Image (cartoon, rainbow, N blue to C red):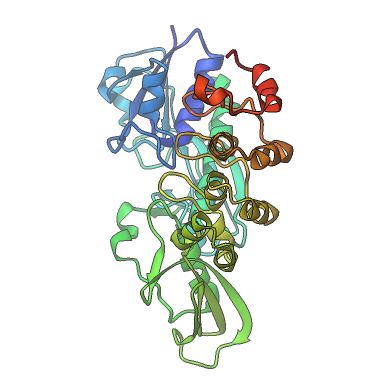
Length: 404
């Protein structure tokens, strides 16, 4: 029997393992988790949590050295692989760059910091060096003008998942075409290239360079750039040529700071997510709208995965639900447990007796069939006492997919 081993972390590893479980039932599945694995879902899915939920064996690296019919997939794995210790030749890695460029670390940060217009993902064979193996497949990713490192990382995950699944049959059979990496434009960056504990905004730069700094280090689960006592999440270059010394504050208000640079004045938008969530929760909608000037702020989530829209739905703040949806916020956003907005709207309807947000989300495209990461349906946590609080229209919808 063939063995497929997924080694790594996060949603990309989970989604690839799920695909393997569903499509290769004749193979044995095992996984190796990273040393930093906590076993709980946060802003990313946990590979350990998913493996335990699906009765997949979690093993160590040495446990698979002697398996001959093995497909080993390194997916953001944090251990060095020595191919000579394996009996299998089917050892592959997904790397978040267009190799041979950007070998090593910080692959969602450095391309933005250096002003690249594109990057990509590479599926390659694992060799003894660092990201040096022969290339099997690549997919380019366009770096948009306003992409942050978090935005780019999400694109890399999506493309990486796609490229592995696309090539999985060939990887299993071993019938892959290998292309030697070019010697030209080969670059490498170690973990020590960036010291995240001492990040500083260098304002003695052009507006373009400052914008790239803000974008490159805007990765909310871990860090934002701080300067002058504020955290900044987004920025906008104006058409005004700077007449002051670089770093001079021209204007400082609740939502942004405008400063001079080497060439053009730039607006730095402050991270006001916590203030925005508080304003929505308390019904201070005028303040909430005032705080919603940055698209990055209103599309951000706090540590549990709650966005401004999640908070508006939970608090039955219909005005802000309409306002945020009209601004283009993603209604398919999930919290860290995979809870949908429709699930929150259901709880709000039971609690308040007002089901208007629930119906609006249904009309906007959310599905009553959606489940969370544990497989729970929208109606699974409705007890008999609360069932009488649900309108007949909603009961009829639920009865199509569940049995009360």
